[in-house]
Image (spheres, rainbow, N blue to C red):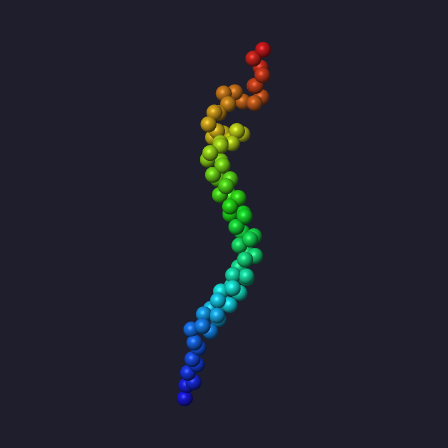
Length: 74
């Protein structure tokens, strides 16, 4: 004979809430470690699109002369 366990809605919601909080507390350190790295990568990508890197060959204003020839116009 099967026993029927009757859990009222209030107790069921409390159990769900406790399980949710425990999972949240377990995932919180992972999020705190990985989220700043993710945001940093996205921020660097956005900043590189807005302000091109001066040293890169894909900059908006490439140098006409290589650095070793700079200043040889005297």
